[in-house]
Image (cartoon, rainbow, N blue to C red; front, side):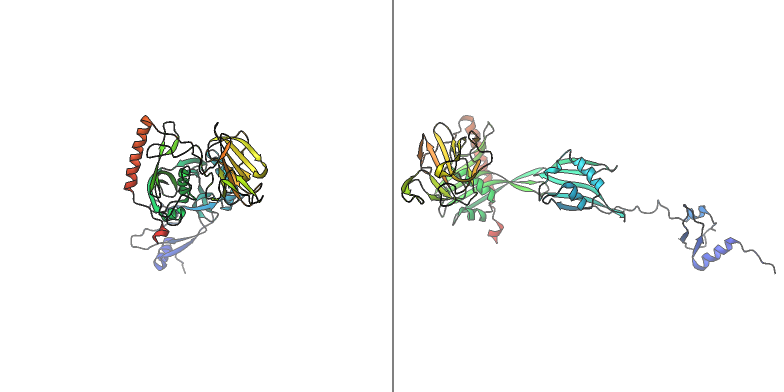
Length: 447
């Protein structure tokens, strides 16, 4: 019996017709996989297939015709600096390898010293997800805020290096109006009007030369304030600006003040006549205190007999800041008998002020130190002959101790000539802006 040789092409053709799928066992090599599955659709026009590398290439998918794989979107993590943290520790804990972290920190040092990180500071880290199990993500960028509207960043470049930079966002200033009537306290009335606490302190300080907020405020008195709010363009950061205009009505008397920058660059508040609201000395060099003892003869609470009280006492919690009542030079700083820890400031040839029973001096306060009005010089305590924490405050005029609540304070500056005319233009502008604004109402009050 003679066996006829069946051509290989016939075997392949019959296999295609029978199943539509065939497997080729090929020798192992770097170019060719051991087993290769090739799905084929049989049609009448399908050409015959010859075995070889060219045939395999012919049935591979065309890379040009396939859609390119898109990278997955990047994602960001926000990290918070904890006590004792270093930037290296934070980045390693976030999953960044030590080499990338070290290179990024080195680049950052051209714009920011990492040792200046503070607890609570936020660091925003951006990652690009990877496509392999051994590289789950790539560290792309690190960004941190170093001041209001100021950011520094480190970004990965195409060649794998890191480059640092800084950005300052555009700021937008808006004006707001707050007003209210005092029913029980100025603080509650200001809160209902939506006035931030920081601006309330600025308001009180601006009027502190003429108003005793512990005794002069009465039910039915009112206030009006126009202030700035400064925001970044993206709206993520905002802060309070300055009070531009304010008015305080006490028992029917209106006391408006306006913020004005003089040609010398000095900024101060002036009344509607151009007279400075700031006097040479403050009557009450402490905030939020209660007048506990006035000036004059009284029965001493410790000695038990009548004795002249040469100042006024302001009761306040321990540690409450004490301010310099005016510009001057410290001519005594130390313990002084029953006064305890004591500071005396010489303001000019006529006036001195004294502060007693301090818990501590502000760091850097010493004899000969020049201080500015409103600068913290110490903190309320109960040293010396004292029954509780309070400030004993004295004003000394030509060597004689006088009543701080009754003495006629040296007047402030009066604008004249072209400077007064320029102030009047600013005043008119602020009056018009205030009239055009709607009052702000706090959310709590509205509810």
